[in-house]
Amino acid sequence: MGISAGLLGVLFNRGILFSLRCYQNLSFPLPLRIAVAGLISGSIVAALPPFFRDNAGLRDFLITGEGGWQLTAIALIAYFILTLVAYGSGAPGGLFSPALVLGSALGYLIGVAEVSILEFGSANTYALAGMGAMFTAVVRVPVTAIIIIFELTANFELVLPLMITCATAYVVAEGLASGSLYQRLLAAKGINLREEAQVDPLLARLTAEQVMQSSVDTLSPDLTLDETCQAFSRSPHRGFPVVEQGRLVGMITQTDLGKFMSRSQPLTLQDMMTKRPMSVSPTAPLQEVLYLLNRYQLSHLPVTKRERLVGIITRSDIIRAEVEELHDPKRIPSGMEQRVTGEPSYIIYQTRSPAVGKGRILLPLANPDTVASLTEFGSAIAQFSQAELELLHLIKVPRHLAPDQVWVDDTIGRKLLQQGETIANQYKIPIHTQIRTTHERSEAILEVIQERKISLLILGWKGTKNIFTGHLFGKIASKLIRRANCDLVLIKRSEDQKQREKEYTRWLIPLAMENTQVEQLLALLPQLSALFPNPEYILCGVTANSETNDTQTLLETRAEALQKQLESPVESIGLSPPSQENQVLQLAREKACDVIVLLTNLQIASRSLILEPSDENNLPAMIANRFQGTVILVRPAPKT
Image (cartoon, rainbow, N blue to C red; front, side, top):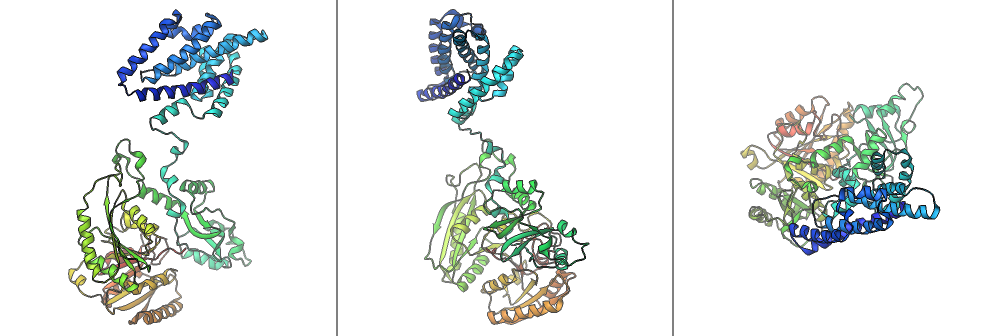
């Protein structure tokens, strides 16, 4: 019974879909399709015995076997065909009752055969079990079928036959064609229901590499207990990866450290750390990362590639990604939710110059008031480094429209690019231009960085009035600071028109001596000052500890090396830890500095010049917003 019902259920499902396709190919309007179905059904029923005209009592008639096996066989074939004819037309109706009628007819015929051969059993029991088996084969819900038939009969002796036939029918039907009839009907209408659809699309789309922090503070396994405690005291991090020769060998957290504080014997970090810690690959989806964080109650999850540490990811990183990527569903037109994540940007205009292969600088242009200053700045850097200049204008389109199909007016964009190209031509450098339509400007810029192999990204910044907001630089710049795999420079021009027109002759560069990216900043400094003739530089060292002698020595060494490199005077001044922000601003006023260059990073570090949008003691943010002159914020490319 179970095998037969499974086979008939698969045949029934395919017949329904075939009937729908046939009616669709006719291209008849709905009233005409229903009329055709009524004509065919009425003609067939008129030729059948009278009991077929009582559709409500047909099921009971078949279960009781009043018409014998001959009429039951006719009913099975006729009802199968009539259901396909009627349902395919689009007439209002369901498949629940037809499945029960077909199942009861099939069950009764098999029951009659079983009784005649073995002279044992009841054909009515087979008819009832056949109803459940056929419903299971059509809809693929065996437990529901068992409960429905049991409620119709209230016969406990029927439960075991129902379980056997429904389970067998389900296995057979799924083996031949997986999925219920309702799923296939929805798929025919373009609606695909999958288990993956229950997963947050953002978590399934983004990977650990896109959200992780590439610049990671690490510890060496040979550190002593005291040195490890000092590292934790200088940083708000609750855990550190332990790295040896670039390979991740362990993790140490504040909880681990607390277990060894009372020990009297000398210990090294290798004795205290958690060896062989949990990690993920850069291509792991965020849903896997979040599962591991929850499953093992982790605060930090290292990201490794062939055992080498390439980044670290926390719950805060995932939350920040969701805040930036997800949008208010009220703004999404009905039926367009599947496009909330956006589509790739589309190039609608571009020009190309000969490539020199010595780097490429990307300059997004959007504000007519800043085109001249940004282009001059970027062109001077390109000329100094013998690189190419890529001018980009982005046109944002609504999310329910595809970027490659929407019509837009690119007049403003072309004017901005022509203005920038005119300025850049004076520097005699290769210039490329392009206009793109996009759903998300930050994603389009990341696409261009990847496609065009950009080495330096330059953005304008108006400054932030409220430095305690979640997006310190605005949504676009904050995302690019985290995810762009090239050097990134943000420029906040002076608000004073007179100061903007004068030459920038004195530069103040505060350096957090504990920051490992200081060398990258100093390497970029010659390019940043290429537009300005012979400026003077002041390096002021900021340290989180009291070892001022070592700090001053290191600062003087860097100043001497920078002076030889720039062939310009470089002065070094050390600052004490307290009130570093006021000291930097006071020093800028005393030295009449025109420009302050700040090193930015989205990684939290206590009392150092490292940027974190949610950090209330954010020195770069406070300095950038309070300084009246020009501020250049530099985020070096993540180390690979």
